[in-house]
Length: 201
Image (cartoon, rainbow, N blue to C red; front, side, top):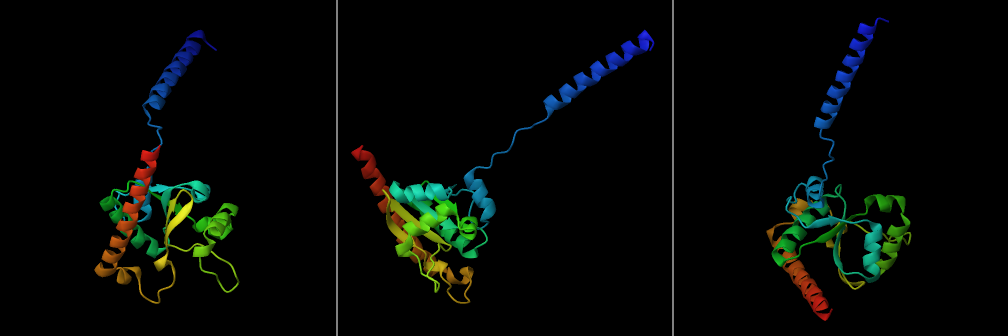
């Protein structure tokens, strides 16, 4: 091969490499991190983006039930009752000064009979309905308030079949008002407990 052609090809290759480096360097390869409240807003469209929900898994919930303190909402996006209840929780939390409610989507764990999920069921067994075959499960939506491993509130009123009524029909202004008043009292009690716990340190 002629020396001039060889030099030309080497120069051309060098220029192409430089152009490639410039092109790659200009690309934005950063992965968009979706924070929990944005993710929750995408899954539950009737809950505002300005929400208090933080995602946790079965292991986190079980750990809290053993010795922790938290407010835990258990549901899943495919369950229409969960969305309405989540909206009530979010609005009540913000009015009460609650900054965080843990959210556990248990649907897949229940389907797979995940061992940690079964341990949660065992921990909550006294609150859960027993089916005809003797089994127990968590149903959506369910809210629990835990203080130092002790369940202080277990609310699953709308997780049981309420007949043919839809969640939109069920959650009229009167029922929403009653539920928010009740939850606000429980949330304030939780804040008082946390405050006394912090002062004792």
